[in-house]
Image 1 (cartoon, rainbow, N blue to C red):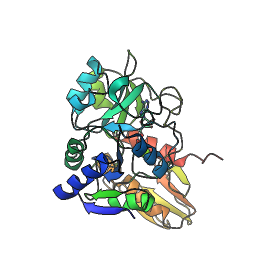
Image 2 (cartoon, helix red, strand yellow):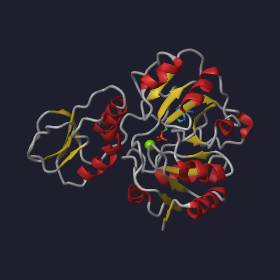
Image 3 (cartoon, rainbow, N blue to C red):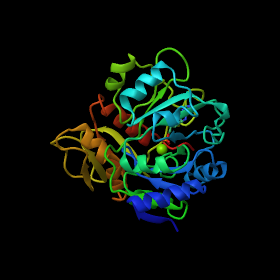
Length: 321
Ligand code: AMP
Ligand code: MG
């Protein structure tokens, strides 16, 4: 059994105690729900990989309450300082050189000499991290390769019985994962994963970004960015302008075509923030509609649309045999 508690002060204190003892706690952030474990607790980290069915080569993002706490295990250069000052707490993850003596479980970083760091901008996450007694590794709280959770119910749908607790704070605000930047080497900052913080906002601080790489699963740069990800069980068809009678429709904008088995509109007013907020919940709903396929309408590729296009492209990949 996995417990579910409201994310009130008592629930957060209980959750922090579990983390300190090596427990697995799912908690809300502004992007998606994360599956937390103390990053210095090797056995807890091993359980995260097991609970998710996550390949051991895919490193975890370490979450801390403050930039100062991040500096205890990661090396910040001027670019990292500028980005942290501009965007933390927020939906931004920085890949930085790891301090080898900091006691981070090698499993958490998949044996790399770099580490992913984020200070999330969510009151519950902040309070939990402040009490956890160390950095908390927290990948999205879903089974590996599947759709990320934006509610506590989504977490339990995937991980019931595999984790100790989920802190329920209702639906998250943004709805897609953090933007991941590579600062592990000098030169232009690399965009490894578009996400909740837009390219334009980041480029205003550090200039033009490099990437994302043509092959997003290129092993050296980011071992975890496997191509198929964020995927419902039903196949996806992207760029749909019409819909077949046995298809479900994930629509965008004021005039979606009719005739689908089931329709969800990401945003009738074509608002990308609203679309991001709705994306994963609607994919789950349409996945349950019994359609042969989910037809997905085209979205603009700018702003938050860059992250949405990335997630939909990965969700539409044919599964590896
Ligand atoms: P997730 O936690 O599943 O949302 O994904 C976190 C992403 O960050 C994964 O795709 C990882 O590949 C990437 N990541 C985490 N740590 C590192 C690292 N040290 N170097 C490169 N990429 C990383
Ligand atoms: Mg994930």
